Length: 345
Image: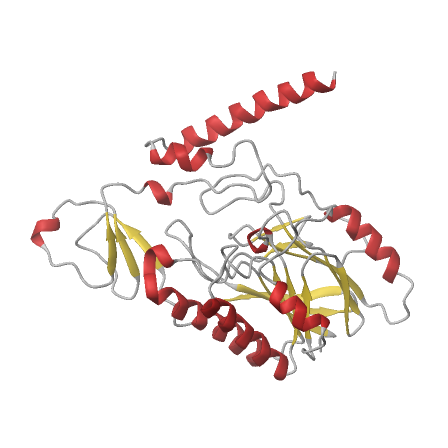
């Protein structure tokens, strides 16, 4: 029997997909939250970790905020420990406020029994002797990993040490195949049981399997590829003894196709070709028709500021292919590196 069971997710992006589903986006995301709850209860997890980007925009609507609060209160009342950490999409501006501020206020006033909101500053959360070092997106990750390990390594009940982060880990790939060149590069420390990360929407591993990027639980845009899942972990004696990935049920996928004669029924569809369009009646689940698939080819940006930020999207709109986008980004990064090196010499 496991010492601890974890459901690891991130990148909920509540408020996304409005450009696809309009009024239906909030209902889809409500279903996402209910599915996460269902899986947490089905597998009797001890803790649910939301590793950043609960919201998509810096100004979520009251409806979006209330929906998420309702889910948090529901999970809290069920006795499931909930850890919610801020991500880059949760930050409003340089004043330091985030979209989690309203939850943070409730947390500081002790309105939750089992929920921990990690908004701006790192925090240690002890769950059955497993210490979660929750490190928000804006912090120096490796430095905080070492700092908080020193705080908990001498504790008598210590069974494991689990840093939780959010950021574009170097070397990981997006759904579009772009390889992250970000500065975030977690170290494979012996004292780390497992890294739990959010940000890149594609599920993958790093640090020889010790690091887990859970990916987003559902698609948020046309370019997001399946499968999308949450991660279930069983831990015992400071080791991950079981790892599995669970799909959320009942959420229609976003599908992009150019074939008007083979449109899937149980999906939200974008048609990228007008060929033979005059010969068929399009079903209601086709919500977008265009002659271009450019927005499915846009390379995702790194989460921290970059001189190349927005370059891929701009080039995609001008008709450049993904390989040309990558080539341009590489060239600009090399030029910037040369400028930086000359400035330091």
